[in-house]
Amino acid sequence: MPRRTATMLASTLLFIGLLCVGVLMPVPYAELGPGPTVNTLGKHGGEPVLQVDGHRTYPTSGHLNMTTVRVTGSDYRMNLVESVVGWLSHDEAVVPRGTLYPDDKSAEQVDQENAEEFTASQESAKVAALHHLAIPVGSRVIVGSVVKGAPAENKLHAGDVVRAVDGTKVGKAADIAKAVTKHKPGERAVFTIVPAAKAKGKDAAATKSLPTTEVAITTARAPDDGRAVVGIQGGVEHTFPFKIDIKLADVGGPSAGLMFSLGLIDKMEPGNLTGGKFVAGTGTIDDDGKVGPIGGISMKIIAARDKGAEYFLTPADNCATAAKDTPHGLRLVKVRTLDDALGALKDIRENKTDALPSCGG
Image (cartoon, rainbow, N blue to C red; front, side, top):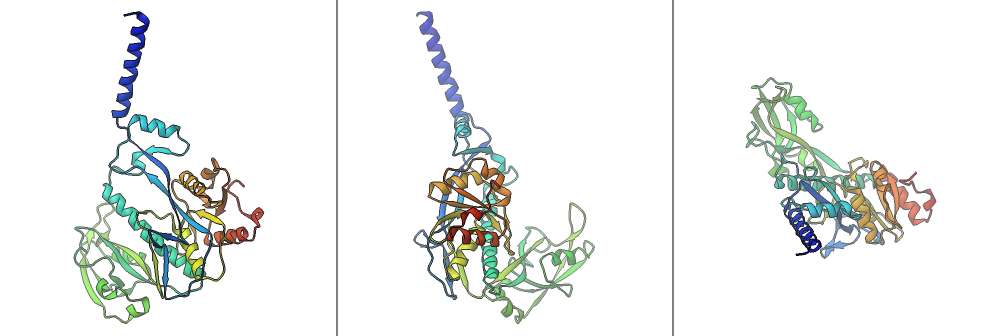
């Protein structure tokens, strides 16, 4: 065999061998990409995303799209070739797998946390929207969760309304821990509660008239600092004067909060927030309307522009990253609060776009 032919054959075999190694070799990375984007003013899966029953609603137009990020599944292992292709791609991002699926958590735990964050974001979105509309919202302190094997297990349950601890009225979730830690480990703390089964479906005012139950729990010693604990997480549950449902399956995390709030306001307030324009956005929101940063902003702005968005409401803390590579034709609008977003939408529908706060400025 001629030397040149032998060299070419050896090189080809080596290349094939390296390619096989690259395809078969798993690497500790995961991939992010632009995910689905859904108009909160429209339908998804054949039914309205935002459903309001018991309060007048108004026609809407345009788009207020929430955006998502597509991620590789928890049971999928990227190979070396896929990771290199992802690194070179403009529309994909390769990140350490541990940032999405920590080693100390199972896939089920990660999914559960994402689902809980999504539910919490819906509640805060409703509260922020109703506050803007000057519609009263009730609230009550509840048992958010009970630690398995803790003293409170089978004595307190998630959803129990906590009225008092040791006879002292509870006004906020932090009051529970404050009252319990006044004890020494081994002492009893007495909870005055309305069981979750009795409180379910009742608003804050109706709950006040329900009979209470006293539950005594012997405290334990916390392993980290030795304080007295019973093993519960306090929480706040809001009660609304009418029914609001957010119907959006297969979505997790808190990042759609801002767009849900805007969609609800648009539906329950006369007028038209967008003026018929295509606006997308992202951002967490708290009960007071403060907008927080999210992950995967670069992928979300690509998804929005691919669907036709002209403007993207961007959390201020995400602006620097988003502005590095903004898709052509998409205007990034910096927002810190729900009021900022509403002000930006007013400028957009009135074609006063020169006044919009930009991520580039």
